[in-house]
Image (cartoon, rainbow, N blue to C red):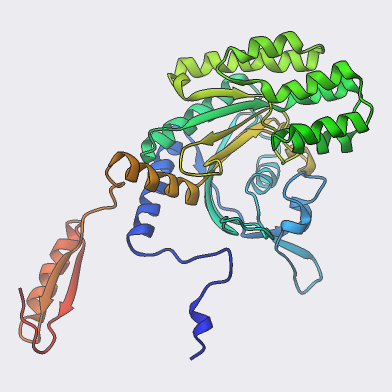
Length: 381
């Protein structure tokens, strides 16, 4: 036998036994919370046409997609991200719908990263999308639902960091930055590479006053008080309006009672170009990557023929499980309940029918039961 066949390719893994039982339990807890808010399940294909995730859409770079061809020569990709798929569905099935549409999903995404650094190429995501509602109340609903879902799943210490793409874009427009420069600067600031950002702005001969404001964006993080300072530096209506919306959002989150989990970071800028307004990430200790990512994408559905605002998020279940495991180790917390252990019934040829009847009776009561044959030399306990 070729023992190499026992191993999985790099970047993917098997999940089984108690670990998988806990994963299913956590997924169910989150799913219950989404249903409480009225979100209805939707399932999209594992692979889509390449154009659903194209550069114009503003999603994962082409080099990180798993691409292949169908028999007609069409380029297909394994989905790296759910949001464009949900946007396509909403545009197709709810094209004339004007009332808010609430959708939730669960499935695996695939990213062909060349440098893994401990990251998986296949991860499970759960999320929700709220379409046809551009209000700040919709922003608040989504973020509050994230907080409550994580609490339901057993996470106790985490922080929701909220940013605003429009604040940064407003300053870039005011400074006259070209789209390519803005994109490069966004990556540098998001990665906290201030020296790289300084060098880029100097190379592009950006006015010194705008240069200082753009570099200061990365310093606007912390409590709601940072919004006041950011407002004083916003010398354009676009950036100012984005800060005022964040202030309103904070008030909505206070009404939900989740304000202790909220912080702000105007230097947090997503790599997904389809985000248009508020963006957010959830961080917790013991995991290097955010366990939740989300934001507003008011123009994405127009690529599929529907003009509609939308906001959503995705929980990276694999990272959440790792965070829960480390949290338990540090704080001595109990595991997520995964159901009772099955009742074990041993049988031999003489009492098989009786033990089978017992097992069937237990299962009718909703209890788990397993039958084991008594092996030679083994006594029934």
